[in-house]
Image (tube, rainbow, N blue to C red; front, side, top):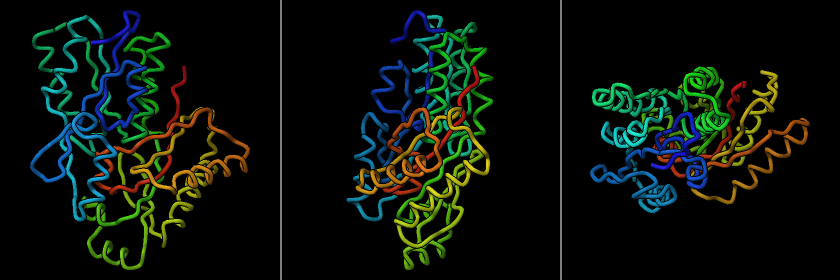
Length: 304
């Protein structure tokens, strides 16, 4: 266990938050990894036994490879909680939305098991109601509140209040992964592949799905940017009150151009986000999108 004596609580999350190792180490977060299987039999810990770039590269090298993910076990969460509980440190565990995984339930079961032996343990398991970069942004807000010296009881409702504000606008190259994951019909997938159609996807209110389809990768990326800025205008959002980020799967040359297009629109509108994080989208979303997801998202900051 590594935690500052001045902390009011310890932040734990599952690996679906897609946080960079440098930030995890700097912020003293504990990450509980998901498991990834490339062959349906052997499961590896995401970010421990297999890196996210290697996960995507395997998908590229092995045509027809449709990986699976498995949630962390109850024991995994117990192992994460126990050192802090034994040290008398309250714990906040932020999990992937329950709409996508049973990770939240594993953490809740682990909390109950730990409390049997440590009835004075203070553990709060939170459904982030979010995925990938948005979950990561929520975790970063939790760290910010912790570092402002707020206690767990004060921080939890502040974090719960912002979960519903998260939005991700993104696209990917291949419809087959959406079909395999049950988020697109086979007929639509085959027709889309023949016509070079690309899905425009939206994550909001705890769910991910295609909103429209357009022809060609370049046009689909532009559509993602258009949809995001239309959303900002319609909702009249003040970006200074939001965290902003862009995400990518495997490294591709289109990403710098995508970021330049976003920056150009910021310049046109006269608004700029206070910060811009860049995220490597991990396996929990990558199994649905394939190696080439790219997008952007926002989450409101806590008001403190």
